[in-house]
Image 1 (cartoon, rainbow, N blue to C red):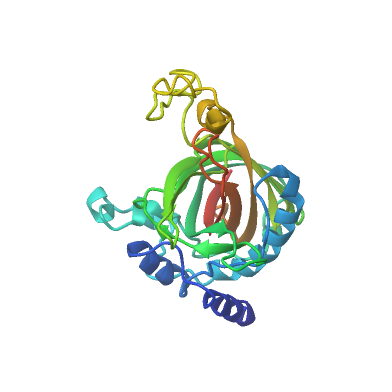
Image 2 (cartoon, rainbow, N blue to C red):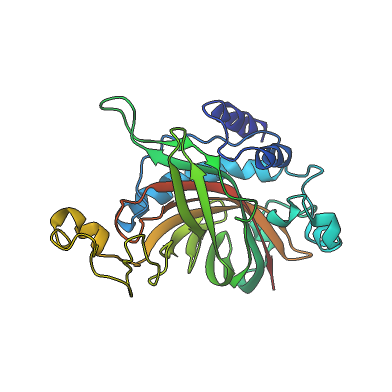
Length: 315
């Protein structure tokens, strides 16, 4: 345990945590240190690179699992504690953007009986957002760089539900419903802002308790009826920029004219850090990589890495 924690502290010195201000202070209190934001994982969020992504993320997820075990600080509240707070006690504190923690229980998933469960109150609280950028040096490899959070504290996914199967040390999770997406915008060191839809829609994750992962759907950040400044959209609006009739169908404007609201794929890996058979609560850490907004197909997506905590109740 101490080795894992020291390893993560050492990794965190390679770069600061993406979120800033109140979020950064909140992360420090919950994890006792700032999670690392840089990684040597080089991968794409597309399905063709899925196997490589899951393999690399699962190795980190096993290390990150140690952090949840030390999250019992003053700012980490259990589900019952959160339910006992009034609106005025929660207002303005940021607690509405956090996931519950487990006070009792163990780290052995075998304490849960094998079978098929329904899970609810599935919550995912990000603690780090990083974006994959090309190296500033010629011939250098792309890396995930720290970002500054531009969104208010409204990015936690919550009230998700689905099925959870346990077979010894093997588990399978299928997400079906709930508040499973949140619009987030982060800013790169150079000032560029990267919007994306943080989500785990239709997630199907399989594996062991230490690392179970899989693919999920990433819907378009913009809807098909969204119109750009030229009045062009995927399902409505003009076909071309009407102010440029002579060049409206030129090859240079093809990407801007041909709007697409098609979704893409993301990858996520989860690790179980604690279970409580008495209350059927389960918690751990996760790491996902997903594409950013494409402005309805006119821009190439960037890879977004999200790390954080998760919690669910089984029945």
